[in-house]
Length: 334
Image (cartoon, rainbow, N blue to C red; front, side, top):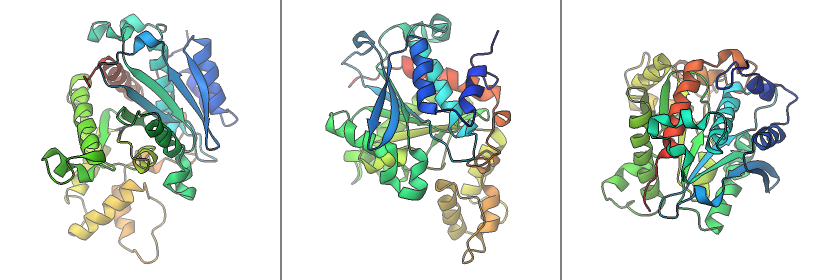
């Protein structure tokens, strides 16, 4: 029988094939499994949205929008960036629709996955467009603008990117650095910063339940959250790294990494991390060659031929299944 939940899945391997139309693949795969999915075209981008029947939503609780971009860099298989997260959300959608062993997957949380879960799943197009067209070129910017128009700007948006390699769940701090004052009631205690801080805290609570001892907070590259934030929507990025890579970067960002010399180096490393910049250093930045050595190998594989199925790990899929099931089962009052 075909493995269905890990990196050896025949469906995932077909999804990663260079000729695959990913948006069409996602829609067909979900429809064949009776998941209520449809195309959503905005500003020239092809998204796929999953919204479940009305009784899956309780108006007394917050709506959760789970996002993964399906586009990939030209010439790259895009296994971890971002095929794995797409496939993990596809499997969750199947469980929430009542197939694929939903009872077993939800057993840890009392089978609540068969009840109202307030979950919308969105597969976005154009995340990679920010590299050439700027943040507003991302598909998530138009989606975020649409959410505001529909009055859904208070929904909890979770962005999943590079979730197929490693054994540590990483809650990203990208775009959240200005929220510390918000949690202390400072001048940013209202608006987007307040919403981002609250979302960060709710995400941490879910991670403590679903991945005890297997999660950290860490600065990471931006993803679709850049477009959402530009549209005024708070969004939390979740990714996965091998423990050694996560710890190494954590120490480096704390100023404890080899070759780092004070605050300027740390700030320069932070900029390299958020941009996921690990190519050749600029001529006017000779220190960058040393700083780039602290970029995790997992991120170095992105946007190239090395981001293939062989780099994915079963541990990441198990970790993500637990987190996604717990997230879907969590209901936060409005």
